[in-house]
Image (cartoon, rainbow, N blue to C red; front, side):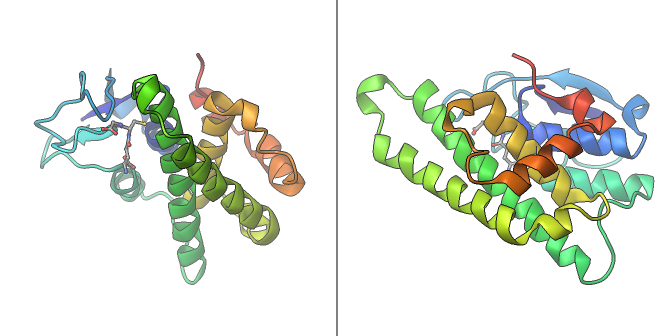
Length: 202
Ligand SMILES: N[C@@H](CCC(=O)N[C@@H](CS)C(=O)NCC(=O)O)C(=O)O
């Protein structure tokens, strides 16, 4: 099976972390691709007509996307434990959606600067995305540390990927300010081998 990904994509990073955590790295081949909203670049449109990465090309069925589907597929394939049983599952899935939401807003901010011509950039939208991120980080810091500090699961992978992306692309926003508990959690979780192996490098 072949995973189309980018080492700089926080969505693809979640998938790579799952592969590391479930011991499946050797069973896949990888293709690095790149694209943006206005130019799909090398993203294989025949496999994902949405023109987004990551995409997983399977040997025995249609290609699957998006990152959430791929992560769940990979965990199931390996009999992994990244999706908890019982009520904790809903918390993990909510955290997964929260991490993805942070990434979506961060990516929109990055694309606004990178893809739009300067005269068309709209600071109000950029600021509104940061307001969403900032409010969400506050909520993570106040009410989610208990879950985040529990057994490692998909929710933690998504939040760690999101925070790693903020450090990588939006460092100047200083997300740690006022979010001490979240910052401490992130420092500790970042020592995990799967996160070390997948950290974005410019
Ligand atoms: N919901 C998708 C989002 C994937 C996504 O937006 N990936 C970015 C790269 S980080 C992309 O492919 N952008 C191209 C585009 O927006 O068309 C997922 O979780 O996989």
